[in-house]
Length: 126
Image 1 (cartoon, rainbow, N blue to C red):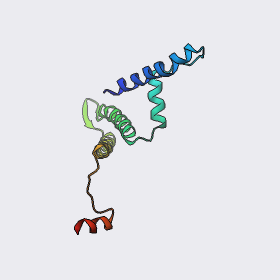
Image 2: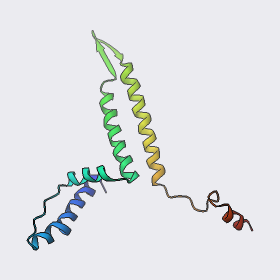
Image 3: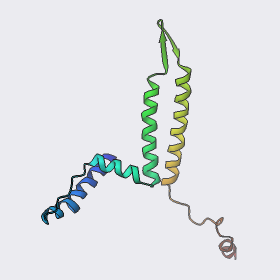
Image 4: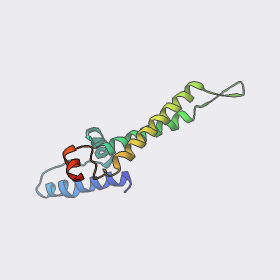
């Protein structure tokens, strides 16, 4: 499911499960647009997948912005802007780390690991 579709579904659920029943009882409940729900959730979540995904999106936006400023043109001469090139490389490295951490956090934990409980490991060897 696309991220925007997720938040739009959350807004629809808010309307169906909260707003409509409250209105039937004569209670006024404010609308909650899907973008506001997304912002609220991102602000309050501790879910590492959501947090890392948001960080990757921010790093991607930063990378795109810096990419546009990698070449400096002075008097018709094109040169690499070293400061922006360094910044670009730092952003790419941070993006790579976040993507790796996201990939690791979405992989299922391996079962049968013996390193956590020596007593179980000894019993399994018997």
